[in-house]
Image 1: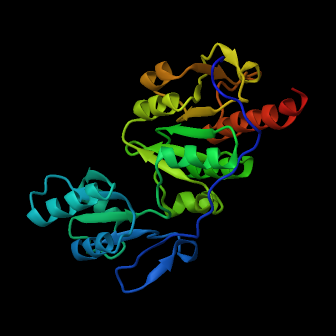
Image 2: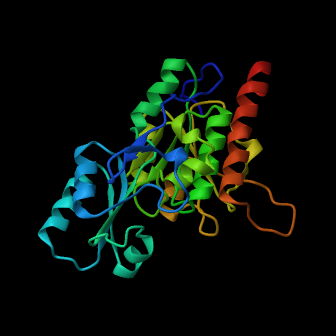
Length: 286
């Protein structure tokens, strides 16, 4: 990996206060104080528009499939401009998600924290004088897995996490709870295209390692001491073909038992702490 810079070891993340979301019933509520049912749900056309006007970060907007109503189209347009993922949903799904039973064909899920740009995460590492360590989550839809990955990211001193806008869990209250609050201390970027994100990191001098069961290199044989992006995929499917092909290297975690794969968050944790080991332990000896 010649030609890319090396620097001091370490990690970290930008600390942010817990984000708050819009309560359509007239007050702002801390996510950590909410009940499990209805966490972060905003229902109804006026409530969602007011939330967007108030600057509330909307993670996903679910709109009844086949609706041609002008007001719903307007809400969808405003939400997209604000960076939300807009998803068509069957009315039965909306009914099952609804707490008020009066969703009016649209339900929004508020994000528990604000998203950042990849460049913000890169800048954090630069300001600390550290080699970047960033984790890219390719289509991890289980919020508990994503929350666990974010928790390990914060604990290991990694600088941030990148998730795709679609086919992925977002920064929901469930993710916040699964992360034990690490979402409030870990910068998280959400991107439209994961391959484009990888190429952006490459241009910034970052080596990209994909975790794959078919990876020809065992993780401890890889060099994680430079600026590194670790890509992990969903259980079963793993990282997508196009993402895998755009990685600089594909590494595997050797499996010695009868089970062929690990939980996605466990795989991510092993990779992150191998990077920490190389930077903190091997880096001292170099």
